[in-house]
Length: 439
Image (cartoon, rainbow, N blue to C red):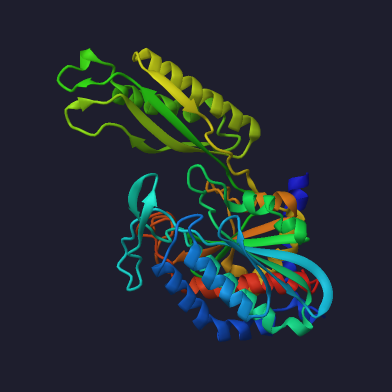
């Protein structure tokens, strides 16, 4: 019954955007179009600059300086060095009103770019002890640029703006380096919502599974909980010509990976909710004719239910230890090996309130309800503190099938730059409507 009522309320919200209204605040705001026209050249230039100079999590030194300098030039109260390289700033409107927060993430990924852009990244860095290429393969350069533009637009309206806005430019959304703290949880630990408690928090993400011009949304659970695991299979080193002289951890690791596939396919009720167990890296051995001492396996677990999450942890531990033992090896399994991200949940009431804003910004035919997304977002930590609304902006060029386009995190990930305009308009419309009490 609750699901039905929610669906009806959301449908009514959509319908209301098409009906005549007596309030200018309930219509497309002319200032959104005006600011978009004025600022899109800047947003585009920022995005290309950031794309060409990406930085890994907790290393966003150049990025955070660019952001902080811009926010100071707007006359905002700026604080830097939050959670290592994070930047926060407060805009106080000229009229009383609500408090909101808007968040963008700034970090790039250890990915070597392969798409031929004239401003493609040539950057390299060190990740887990290896030299790697660095690329904004997830689109955080777009998020940062859009929020820099939104901050400038709102600052230009300061005198007549009701309420206050906290701009959150966050490092390490993809996770901090091993042994470090970072990301959304660390920003909250350092008090950004203690010093400025918002009524609501907003965020967006460019997304390859939607075409440019589209905006995706979902009420309630939207993105999965994410956990990392680390499994070390320990054998006994020997010459490759004499495998019987040792214990081969490579064969044992391969068997662990194969057996782990049954955790989802045979032990989880995926008719209830989806589950993913993915091995993302295998490291073991250095020479063709040496069987090594050990092999390291790392990967991720994605779930939407706490009970299923705990069961997967237990099952993967069991598989790792017993399959390794069957080969005469041992397994040292850390499942999970760090504290993961919880489910990203859009507050249903806030979603229903702000959905008309997305329709105003992009048009009803371009606003798409999405299914559960197995990707994860540490925006979830903010949305556990206050009601949150996180939406998706299509990045795949029109005419290209978004289901087969290179995905976020791919070295061929491509952002249609018209999505910058859509994201800017969507977020500015959402912020203004909330601050002015529309919805």
